[in-house]
Amino acid sequence: MSGNNGGGTPLKLTVAMVEAALEAVGGIKTAASLILNVHRSTLYRFIDNNPELKDFCAEINEQTKDLAEGKVLTAMKDGDMQTVRWYLDRMARDRGYGHINVDLGNKDDKPFKVAGATTLDLTKLTQDQKKALLTALKPDEPQS
Image 1 (cartoon, rainbow, N blue to C red):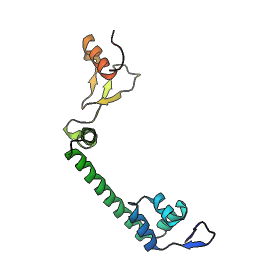
Image 2 (image 1 turned 120 degrees about the vertical axis):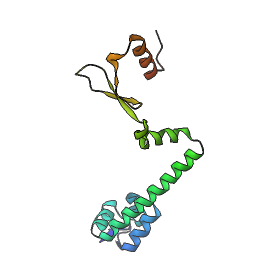
Image 3 (image 1 turned 45 degrees about the vertical axis):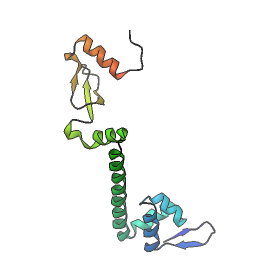
Image 4 (image 1 turned 90 degrees about the vertical axis):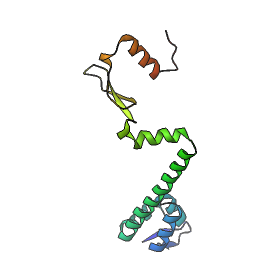
């Protein structure tokens, strides 16, 4: 399969060239196509026509995920609380972190999500509790 190297001369892609480019950019195909100086659709077609590259792409993607997870772990060990909250929100839902549905008590309204872990039925809250909840959800609005 050939692409265009910008000078009008066809560039013959090889599996080795594509593997090297993909490895250099962590499996990001658009970036690899820039390195190879071919249109990304040319690269996608070449990968589709070479099954061994599909496996290679999957392996590179797994390695890139491992690197990213390592950075997340390092950030958490360094006390980066934003990363800690992000991790708990996505990976610790079984421990009560994540999002909850808030039931407004109206059949026509769809529940919306807020931070927390259980469904909250507003019809069971007192007026003071509802006011406190609204204040917590909109902390920048002036209180009356």
